[in-house]
Every structure is written in C-alpha cells, then in structure tokens.
Length: 332
Image (cartoon, rainbow, N blue to C red):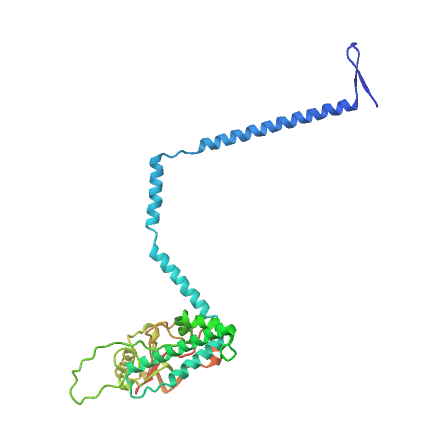
C-alpha cells in the first residue's frame, strides 16, 4: 500500500495511509450532516413556537356568545323555503321522467283517451254533467291502464298489450307523474264550477244554451268550439288583451265589430286560451292563460281542430297533441 510522509519539525515522521484519510473524510461528512440537521430542527422549533403564540385564546363569555349566534342562525333557518325547494325539485324530476316516455307511447295514450271521450253519450246533459262524465271517463281509463301496466310489470304476461320494458315507465307516468303527462299530451278538461242556482226565472222561460267553457254563460251567437284554432288577420293582439273567460273574449269581439269605424276591419273570429299552462302556437311568442285574440277573415278557416297532425308535431317538438285553444266565428 502506498504511503504519504510529512515532516513534523524534526520530531519524527507521521505516516498517513489512504484508509485513514477515507475515515477522516467520512467523519467530517457526518459532522457536517449533524450540524445541518440540528439547524433545521431548531428552525422548525422556532416556527412552531411562533404559531402557538399566535393562537388567540377565547374567554368563556366569547364562547357563549358564539354558541348563541350559531343557535340563532339555526333557529332562523328558512324551513318552509327548504321544503318548497325540495318539492320543486321533485316536480322537476317528475317532468323529466314524464318527458322520457317514447313518442309512440304518448301517441297511443292520447288516441285511447280520445276514443274513450268520443264514446261518451253526452246528449241531453248540461255542461256540469258533461264535465263530470269526461273527468270520470279519463280517471277510469287511467286506473285501468295503471292496473294493466303493473300486471305486465309483475307477471311479464305475453297477453298484455304493453311491452315489459315500457310497463315501468308507463306505470310511473300514470301514477305519480299524471299531471305532468296530462299537460304534455295537451289533455285539458274544464274545471267544474259549482254555482248556486236560484229558481227565480219566470214560468215558461227556457234555459240558456248550455255552457261549454268555465265562466259566465256563452252567448248563442259566439258559436264556441273547444280545441279549435281559427286563422285570420289580428284586429286585436291577444298578447296584451286578456279576458277572464271565453264568453268575455267573444263579447269583446262583438263589441269591436259593433263599434268599428268605416273602413276598419270588423272582428268576426275570437280565439281564447283557457289553459292555465298557456297555449301553443307556431310563432315565436309565448301565449299565456286568458289571452283573447280578435281576428277578421273574409272566409274563416280552421288552422287546427282537436289534434295537431303528427307531421306538424314532428317539425314542432314543443307542440302538444290536443289543440288547447277555444274559438268561434261570429257574424261580422
């Protein structure tokens, strides 16, 4: 092994090998590492000490006030608003579920309801009785269809007219989402108005023509038609012309025709929106409840009657199946 020699001022020679040199270097490295570790630990200790000194101690009185503040906030939490929001979320989810019904299934539901309504024998009945019969017929159909859907869902019966994969959607739509589904297919039956009758008419006087829409009795010259939309030039825009009932809308048409000046168009068509959810139209406007349109046409022509055609609904996805408007043609 090679050796290195240094003179030590005449007192002899000090011999240092490579092995001893390596040991000395390692010792120095360890000493430096320990020094840096000690410095790092001291800085961490100083930082933690500063943090602990920055903590603000609260008195018992302050803690009591904070607890009281939390209790007051909880007490004034708008519980009714929270319930209303949750109910609204449920309604929105119901609308989303109802809109998931396939188009052919909604079409089938509409056709069956119309067939059930057309099979009613309402001759010789007044408006109230007719409305009651229609409501009972629709409710009876809904209960029968709901029972059939549940049986198809449980038994997977091959004799059922409802496919098993559609039975669940149909049962949910007919049970919990029925109001939403009714609105989507355009089903609207006038609400029965309970009026107290007073038998104060002179003997021999006949009853007025039966009502077909809620509100005051419809004048015979109005020729009212439910689920009908007539075309014509607007004499008075319904967007800014609202009336309480279809009879009032018809009367507005009659008054306009009576008071029109020479050269002005005279109203001979009235179109009214009786639905609380608004009425559909192909234009860009949003038509709301109780809109009353006064129109004129030399030869009145129907735009739509009873149902919107399937081709029209395909090009207008927002259109319902049943025409929601009520209208009539009067003598100008």
